[in-house]
Image (cartoon, rainbow, N blue to C red; front, side, top):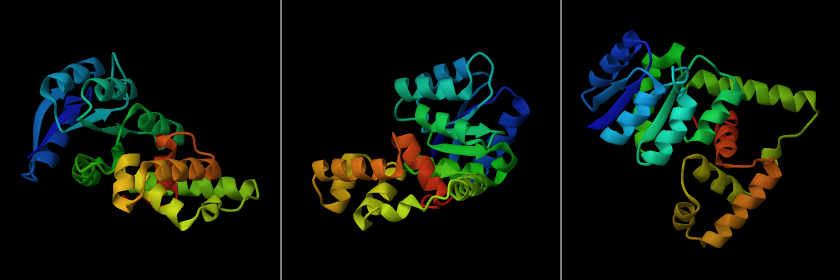
Length: 215
């Protein structure tokens, strides 16, 4: 059973999420919180496998709660629920430690696959988010008369990028590709420079835009 904590200031939303998740028979909701501070406290106390957090909660918003839960309960994977498909919100959530980002309009169809995915260590995003990010990316490339920087990567760098975007550490990538950690560090540095990326959150977001991570 996947143990899940739900946090949303609307009890009706929490009840709906509980029903959608527990009807699968593979998920147990072990706690509910009505605000961000309570979510942090319950996550530390219950140590759930996954926490599903609304982005707009009282006392402490979902992104700040994510940062605190990630620090205090590092084994808990976090999914953000939001009404915003804006890239800035997604990037902030990823930077805080979230592994999944769902739009509330698609919660019913997405929440169970998202819980299963992040529990396995894989990122998950609503399909509509991936589409919005891709459209924004293509519009930016066209406006600036730029070529797709992805084509600048070597095949090995593309392989490393995909593994990093799927949540693998440098050490795990090195083991999977039978390379040294130093070599992976070099590939990571090179691909980030070519794509003008600065951290893991931006790598994941780029991968969503490019369809490397498919919801």
